[in-house]
Amino acid sequence: MIPELHIEDYSYSLPDARIAKYPLSERDASKLLIYRDGQVRERVFRALAEELPEGSLMVFNDTKVVPARLFFRRPTGAHIEIFCLEPDTPAEYNTIFATTASCRWKCVIGNSKRLKTDEWLTLDVDTDEWDDLALKARLIGRDGQTGVVEFAWQSGIPFSAVLERCGRVPIPPYLNRETEEIDLERYQTLYAHIRGSVAAPTAGLHFTQRVLDDIAAKGIDIENVCLHVGAGTFLPVKSSLVSEHPMHREPFVVSRELLCRLCEGGRPVVAVGTTSVRTLESLYYVGISCLEHGHPLDVDQWAPYTRDYGVSLRESLGAIVKYLDDNGLRELKVGTRIIIVPGFRFRIVDAMVTNFHQPQSTLLLLISAFVAGDWHTIYDYALAHDFRFLSYGDSSLLFRR
Image 1 (cartoon, one colour):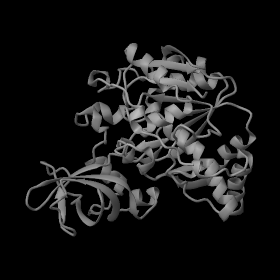
Image 2 (cartoon, rainbow, N blue to C red; image 1 turned 90 degrees about the vertical axis):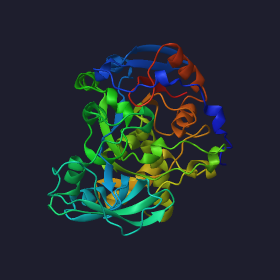
Image 3 (spheres, one colour; image 1 turned 120 degrees about the horizontal axis):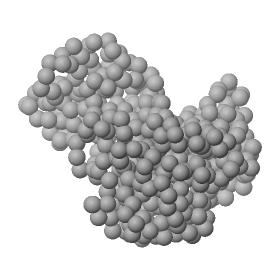
């Protein structure tokens, strides 16, 4: 049954002064709140390894933020901002980043009410630095708040390089400032690898090589998943009933090796960030689709709540591995719209590293589900003890209740 939840019950007062507008000078100098069995204490993030269970398996999201904000000008002189969300043509991230002449993206378009379809826009810059690109864009069609935009350029370089030269890093809107030089490095995890996100998996921003070395020295194994974070991560829940909030699709990739490790079980799984949690917890339902349809399907938003599947985690994950083996594949590629709210049954993740999230957000709902509704204990402590909030804020290590 889909839970009947009101988003107003997941709110708290967050003064603007508590939102971290900039990162600390050292990534691992942030505070670390530790929550276990209803008790809260704090340390410094660089001590994280000391708090992790022996023999854990730690899972990171190695997606990389792309400079997805582009600025154009209409022939009338009007300024247009285009925010690339996900590939349209070609549909695969790797393929679209390699295109060298044109491509199409699903985009959010600012100041677009008077923008006509098929009207070519030119790059909005006050320099001739990018003249060799001759980058232009046009709206192909609209779909609510988004539209499909075609980009065309002449220099023959891949679109990934076009974005690096012309785009800006899309820092969160609640920072209320423009992208600055510091964001180019710090709004990216140390281990970012696969291009595709328009928002950073911010729990990973605290990790330094020193922290990663300490984790390895403790004998904790590290694995990666890749979920490309979409702009929907910034979208507030606008309806009072959470059941009326549509979740956006996010593509993810998981290796066969990790699936086999999860099948073995018997060790605590620590997820770094809500994106890793959503990826891992989606796997059970992907396995169900393999059992019922013979191949993996995207995970529906409410799949975890609609029925009792009567299938063990081992059976479900095993079905994914069998599908990969039967088709000569080394990794699972699929998408998820899963929403994790109170009432969700966690099957894989035992602990998570995460930042402090906005009031009335789907991420706060996830936290509440993870700690069996005890999120107020965590957030009241953080507010009373000068923790910094949101993307550039402090961190927490939460153990599932």
